[in-house]
Structures are given as structure tokens and as C-alpha cells.
Length: 556
Image (cartoon, rainbow, N blue to C red; front, top):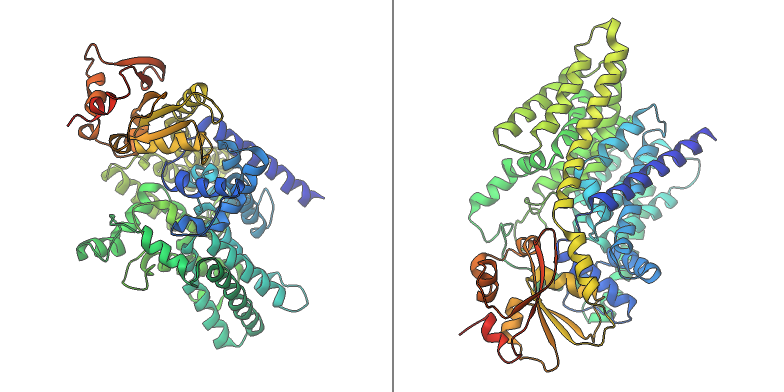
């Protein structure tokens, strides 16, 4: 009963935190992959128009299906889109708590805090993106092995293998990056093969996986005529970018596989918890490869996962490691790091164990972050200060010092999330959404065309629920230059500096009419309809005749 109350209490607390983050720190959407990828495909599924083709997002069913279910139940809106990700984040935290003993006074609560208040776990807790689902799937795979080794009840091993294979399949549905974990499981397989243990599990797991993936690719073949069309769609959707390491000078690749990814982890704030978890590799020393304890299992799992993330290629044609410019691709490491680090952090708070091994890297990372002018130097320094305060406290003051240090540590842990929530409130996502929905609706009769930057166009199509036929159309500036004027249609400009920034639209790329408006030129054929955020978001109606507005926007 006490254990049940612990889980119910934690579930309630996590729900409050997730909802609080959504209602008071909602950043919105990126406007490309999320809106025109997963959200569009989920809406297509709800509207009965979903089909497989050249769009590689259509093959990421692990994200599309739960989003579509939420849309079907609650409508196509932001909360419905955020709900699956919030549930996934909460489930991940609960599994971390469970794997560490499920006690509020034990390592479990530290594992939850290290994962949950990692800034990026909460940031993606309301995004229609697959990365938080891959994190849950990766954790689920390792939990199957952990439970087989340390929590197995009497009976056959095939149920563990079945769970492992199903989780692997669903994670692959979500995003292909789950393959980054396959080398880790291959190492475990070789170790077990060498010791002649758990061979029945691996036999079942390999058999189930071959069967499930054969059925999956058979479905793909039936729909597209090719077993591997998902990979062809990825190639068709690829483009040259800062992570095209096979096309860039080799210096970019060398930077990525040397210090580049480490700096990404430091800049994003993921490095401290990763470092704590990886530090356990040194604490365990010779016991590591024996995997004779839960600590050894989780430490080895994290160490191998980080190694694979650093060096494994994601292309079969060339050596292309995972993109090292966006931390979301590596979010799956956060649960493993939290589980590996939590027991050592708990031991430190109880008996001041591992003080030197924890403090030295934290102070080093604080100095490095400060030297590189990273914004999270204060937060990492807060970690280091909190642990130092307790480590240096005399025995007679240890109780009070522990309470003060833990409070300071939790504040430092949560501070980046607080900053992120404050930043989100300045960007005007909620305000621009309200402005659009106040003046336009999917079922309105008056034809209207709203012209803006590409991200704002994508937002508008999403708010109109991606209808195949609509009286309200959203065009970006380039599309507006190519389309013919429509009769009996009202034309609008929607100006939003933040979505323009997200679109990477420079001042020179803005139409002359927009530039003229920002420069306060008089007698422009524009009428102010609405504004938000003290004029940062503007809706303007173009009052010139329909035949004239293309020349106003893009004069020859």
C-alpha cells in the first residue's frame, strides 16, 4: 500500500509539473518537422487521407498514431498534440523511479529529478516530436534486460524477449535513431554468449524481432511496392545541411567525433548528468564487465550508449555520425544517465561518498562553460556549489548543511527550465495563435489569403486543421509571388518577427511592401486589423485592388 501511494503521489506531482510547464512555459512549435511532418500526417490520418509516399514523416507511426488518436478525441489543437508527449515524459519518469527502488527517500527520487529537470526533457514534454518517445523506448529496452538479470521470476525468458522485440519495433516506428542502441545490445549479446548465459532470451529476441520486422516491411511493400521505401523516402527528403559530414570538409567530421558533441552536451546542460553517470564507470573499475550488480549494468549501458552516440554512423553509404548540432537527437541518453548517476548522488548526500569524483568535473565544467560564455554556467556552478557546501560542512552541522545543499541543488537543477519558460513567454506564440483564430476559422465563408513567412504559413495551415479545401489559405512570400490574384478574396499580411526568425528569413528577403511598412513609409495600401505583443505581431489587410498586390509585394 505504501509503495502504491508513492507512485500515486509521484504521478500527481509529475502531472502538475507537466501541466504547469505547458500552460506557463509553452514555446509552441518549430514550424517545420513538427507542424508539416508529424502534425500534418496525424491530421491526415484523422481525416481519412493518410497514405504512404515520398514523405518520410509518414513512416514514423510511433509518433503519428498517438497524436492522431489524441486529435480524434480532443480535436486538432495544441493541447491534444502535447498530451501524448506529456504522458510519455511522465511514464519515463515513473519507470526511472521504479528501476531505482520506488522510494521517495532513496535513489529513485534523484533519478526522477535528474531526468525531469533536465531542461530538454521538459522542453520536449509538450512537443509533437519523436525524440521523447525514443527516450522511453530506449529505456524500455534496457529495462527488459535489467529485469531479466536482476528481477526475474521463475519461468521462461520468452516474455522478456517478446517485450524487448515489441518495444524495439515501436521505437523504430517512432524514429530510426533507435538503431544507435543496437551496438550496445550486441555487446551484451556477446558478453552473454561468452559466459553462456541468457541464451534462450537472445534466441527468442532475435526470432521475434526478425518476425516483427519482416511483417512490418511486408506492410511497407504492400503499400509502396518496395520493402525499403521508408529509407528511399529519407533519401528523397534529405538536403545539404551543417550535419552532411560526408559532403563537408573532413574537419567538420573530426570536430564532431572529437570535442564537438561534448561541447553540445555542455552547452545544452546535458553534460553534468551524463558526467555523473559516466563517472560511475571509474567507481566500479574491474566489476564493470562482470555486470554482477545493477550499478554495473546501468553504468555499462550508459557508457556503451554514449560511445555509440559519438561514433556510430546513421548512413550505410558513408560515415555520417548523428547530427551534433541539436541535443534532441541524444535525448534518449538522459534516462540512462539519470539511473546510472542517482545511486552515487544518493550516496553522496547520505555519507559524502564520491565527493572528489563528483566535484572535480563539476567545477571544471563550470569554468569551461563560463570561459566559453555558455548561458548555463550559473546552473552548473550551482550544482558544484551545492555539493561543495555539503562536502565541506563539519559533522556537527551536517544535517542543516544537507538540507541547505539539497535545496540549492534542486534550485540549480530547475533554473534552466525556469529560464526556458520565461523565454517562451516572450516569443508570442500564444498571442499569434489567438490573433489568427480570432479573425479566421476553418469553416468561414469569406475567402481570404494570408501572406507571411514560411513558419507562419505552416502555423496558419495547422490552425485551419489542414483541410483539403478551405476558404482561408496561407501563403509564404515566394508562393505569393507565383500565384495569380483570386477574385472576391481578401488579402492580408501577417508580420511576426519571431516566426520570421524561425524561418531564417533575412531583411533582404522580405517583400518591399513589408520593408516599407517597417520603415514607416506613408500612404501604403495597408490597413491595420489587429496587433499583439506591443506591435510585434501585426495583421494587415492589403487594400489595393487584387490585380495590383503582386506588384506591390514583388515589383519586377
